[in-house]
Amino acid sequence: MNRPVKKVSILIVLLIFSAGNCSPDQIAEYMGNMENSEDTNSHSDDQFYSDTGGFDSYRLPVQKPYYFIWANKDDGWFLQSDDSIFSVVNVIEFGIENNTIFGRRGSYDIMGRKRPAGWFIVNLQTEEMVFFEVRAKWERALGVRHIKNKNLQDVSRAWENYAKEN
Image (cartoon, rainbow, N blue to C red; front, side, top):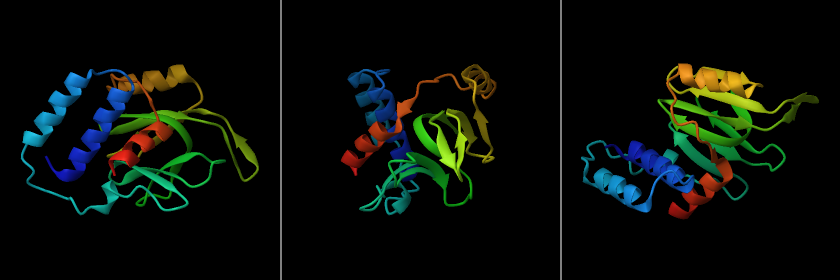
């Protein structure tokens, strides 16, 4: 397994574990399987997966090229990519499955205009971003995308776990 995928897998395992969906024995077994897998395309020097942010910001990589960044407590966490001009603002919780990042975001102001809280889905392959104000519509859209585990992880707690490891 290549290094970035391995680190993302470790992050996902930690997220699942912290959400209470796996026992410590299941985590240990999974981690052991990852350690025993071939590591043919090592990217151990890849800054993308080891950068936790600077002195005035926090950074949580999700899946290259997407990451969360927090630079201002008023705006919360942003999901963004250096390859895109778009971002998801004020992300509170997220999940990832089937090359899809999905989650809940809080309300925010943009240029004096209040945007309501809601839910989002980002397809990592096509970079399609879809936003929902109604949870039931978001859940139906996740079903269409074959997302089975709709459990969400708090972004701040995920960053704290990630920062401890890096």
